[in-house]
Amino acid sequence: QVQLVESGGGLVQPGGSLRLSCAASGTIYSTYTMGWYRQAPGKQRELVATITSGGTTNYGDSAKGRFTISRDNAKNKNTVYLQMNSLKPEDTAVYYCNHKAFGFSDWGQGTQVTVSS
Image 1 (tube, rainbow, N blue to C red):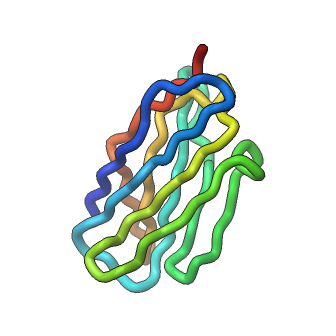
Image 2 (image 1 turned 30 degrees about the horizontal axis):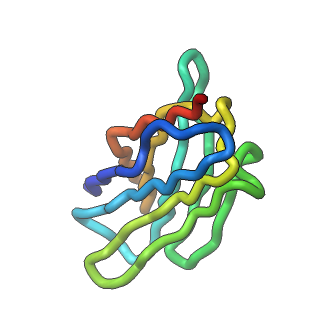
């Protein structure tokens, strides 16, 4: 099992930036996919971005061109980041970190991102 701890959410004005972090601990295999999903009130959870252990990235349509996912694979620092720029009110949601490996999927507790003036 993998434990995920997210940080970096908060309140930001439209057009602003935030950087989310997700630190993974526990049983970390060399092959995995980590990423971010978000869920706004009354909506389904949707893909924001993912990154594999090999560095391949994938973005949801809403994130393309504005968000960047990256990772720190240094020993004992299994951390994924989500740099969010040009934020819009419709980006307001709870952002969840996810780790997938060998059929197992673990989720973080979520961090709130609110974009409002």
